[in-house]
Image 1 (spheres, rainbow, N blue to C red):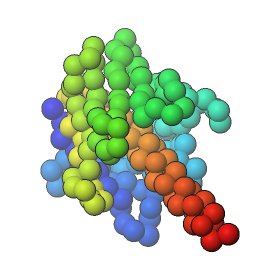
Image 2: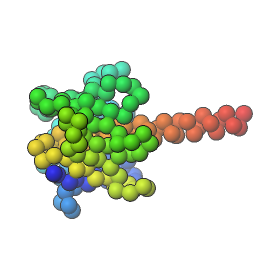
Image 3: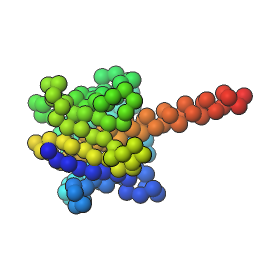
Length: 168
């Protein structure tokens, strides 16, 4: 099992996540402003991660023009991805209804997890199978970052609407 930690590089760079194993740097994920694209740098190699289209629920990891992994979000409302890596099919899903933790399963057996290090933590921990390539592990982390950012944006938007309604 690979144990990775990741978190924002700094408060002033809210789109760059550094990935470490122990205290050794492994790479970084640099998200675009819209969070639907990222550049993943792992062990000196660069990969592109993106969404297939504006309205699509499909995401992909690309290296040198070849797709290394794809992820499909079967439902707009669910916090779940079906991830395909070669002939393997994995599921990345929320561990609970309201929590920020995710589990990775294969054939309904948990094989990994991604979770915050604490309730108010700004760092997270990913425990992922060793047989997944490091860039695929980073892709899974990026998918969780997207879901966390969407959830945060939804809370902020709901709070703004509730405040506007209450003040009118």
